[in-house]
Length: 217
Image 1: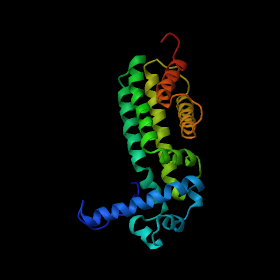
Image 2: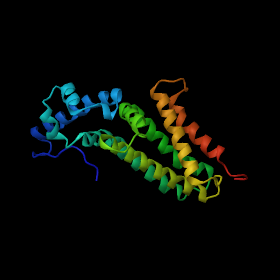
Image 3: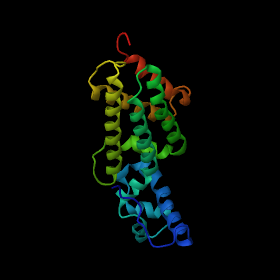
Image 4: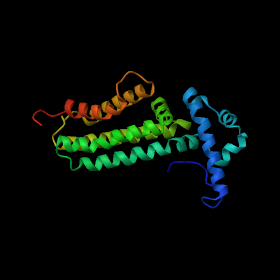
């Protein structure tokens, strides 16, 4: 089970509970720009608490470790990703036409757009760190990357069962698409000239379904 912020005594919604959440959020807000600038291995608890203007000991009242802080930082992103990929996987079980498959994939594109608008810093941190060693504070990120890869393979396998996509080895097809999507996301966050970001998810889906379309499908 993911390790998130420490739970402390206090009535939910009460003053102590709200104060605890505010202090934990202040640490998260202080940590994110540091992690983006230096990488997870280049940031210490001292760095985070100094940025948040808190005593070092305060950190451990809210998080058990830097790993727990990173886990809490990516939790909203991870939860939305997993829910959407699971829904896409279920929809593809019955999607026997190109249009039905497009409809199954569309929420994934919408989810990516939501994340870019709501959590751009967290998305960027994920993209920067996902291929590093799966140790220490980076572990929640690499674990999420592994989950996304597993879903991509599962989704591609289901998409191929209806004979609409070419029978390219599933991991090759799935991970190529994941890599392309990650590169596009990083380009958007770096403000590269990629056209209207809102059109990219549908364009990528069309490219997948048409570029990998089985002959005669």
